[in-house]
Image (tube, rainbow, N blue to C red; front, side):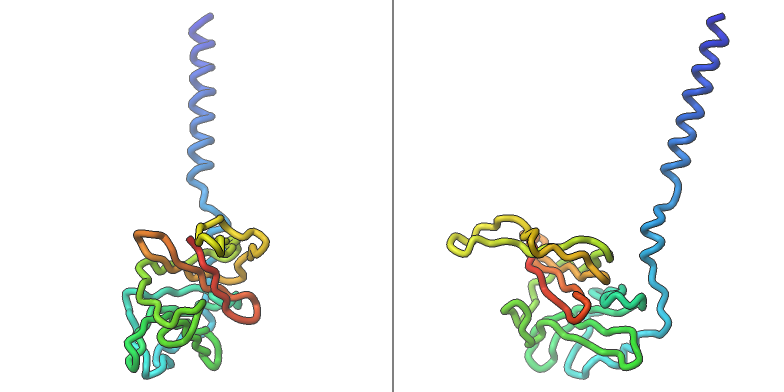
Length: 180
């Protein structure tokens, strides 16, 4: 009598382990939905002559939420040697937008501190860092300014301090949030 019960228990254990393993190996449907298929290609000859592309610091993603693969890269302005970020939209006129490299973004004209340069997925919620104006202490994210990303965001930071920011499209223009 004990042997059939033990066999039954073992069969149940093995079948539940198999179900768990099958569930874990299923692909994440959210990740596959985030894929973007370009309908046109970004023309890298549209990079302004004054900018030098840093090829190893380039990204592709749907930065403006139009479901086309755009291009972003760290660049150096050849005229003033300042570092910045260039975004080229995948569109008919291949708009390009420069942050830093001599142009002001969040009171900075040189983004030469960027060590980490990566994509933030569409749909993530981002918020700027609250800072105590008197002491300079960080108070955490300002949740009153939470924003759900329409397109991919671009995260930049310094390795040691993790200080940096996010560039993201708000539906009309690119915005910068300071992040710690």
